[in-house]
Length: 98
Image 1 (cartoon, helix red, strand yellow):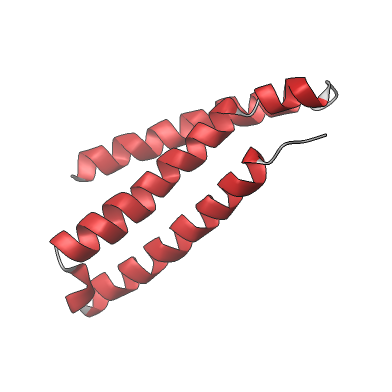
Image 2 (tube, rainbow, N blue to C red; image 1 turned 45 degrees about the horizontal axis):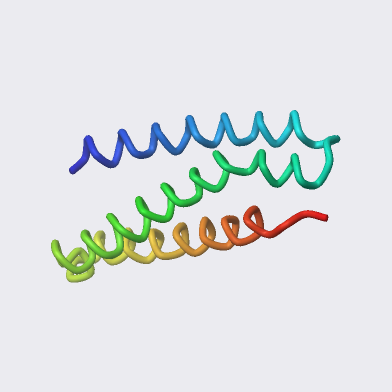
């Protein structure tokens, strides 16, 4: 599971770099072109939500019962906040520009 998390984090980093580059290049383009350049940034946020909510909160918290230990409860709490932050960023990026 550790390797899956590491690989997904690397994927998220690569998608973030590609998404940021695409958005930077489209910053002076039309709204339609800028909205089209959001694909990789949206994918990055989706992968991050899968990592922090899906793996850490759902799998780690429920299946492995990480919430039962002091260290696990702290990780579960932080994973929740990371997933909320990435979800909010996803909503902002996914909103249409005019």
